[in-house]
Length: 363
Ligand code: GDP
Image (cartoon, rainbow, N blue to C red; front, side, top):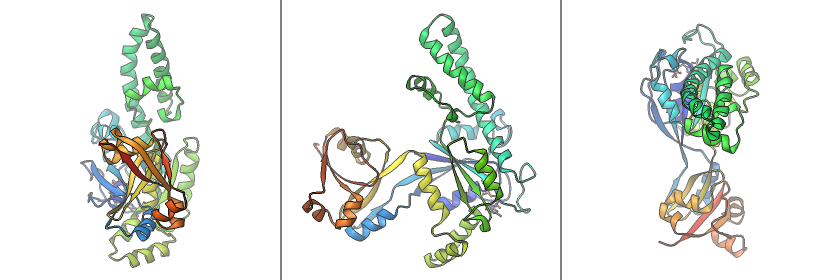
């Protein structure tokens, strides 16, 4: 699962990407400095893993991860091939969710491509480019469906109706994610892979002073997106980058607390991205390894087993489940069993976030 970072040039995308991943993306005060899409794999910070490490004392701990892609080159006119043109749109299409970075900091030394700080205008500039691209997609499809619908084909008529609604919305600046669809309609909509149907989170990049409570730009963003049902996250990306430069954990912690934060904002962002991607975690815990596994919300026990190995899914017999809280409360698997709090679940079981799983399967 991938989340793509988008935003105008010079809003702090590469700096954020650097904060998030170990991969080094170039960051400079110059539009288009990140030319290739940069992909980074980021650990999802989870305090529960630390607790389990303490209790189980395993040889190693493996956290869950999310892929982050830094998508450069989104500028006004991009949908028509301006700047890096269509390249970035292909990159966005491959992502599952969008982190939209908005410049909410003042700094005369950092050029703004449109000459002034205005996150609402910036957001609209990006939205319009993405909507234009989706418009192209829907129009192309409509042309084909229209002919078929005219012949009296009911299926084609149903598709025409929903696509026509999408077209009209996009023309008035409404993204596809804001529309509601029936199950049937979704069958027509999904294959078209609209960009603006992907879930979005707005990341307001602020100055250090605004790291905790935001600023007037953030308030404007919140007001502007209040009907979008999207999360707005405040992050002092430049400050986070400075903190990352510090060698020792103690120094970083001290710097954070000076700013007023109890953890890096980047950690919060990764967790939010994980949620945005509709992901959740289950654990396996043994002396060799304590590990967080990533599944979709709503996955069944066999599907969850399949993340470890496809054979686990195919040969699934049953799952033994311990709730994380129960495990922590009682302190060990043996104690949980003794207390009769280990449950045995079948194929239909829907795995919950934080479940500790042990799968039984045939090979
Ligand atoms: P991108 O083009 O969106 O990838 O932007 P970059 O990450 O390359 O950042 C452009 C410039 O803005 C760089 O010189 C960064 O150091 C600077 N920058 C990024 N975030 C902040 C911030 O929060 N505050 C300030 N003052 N500068 C920042």
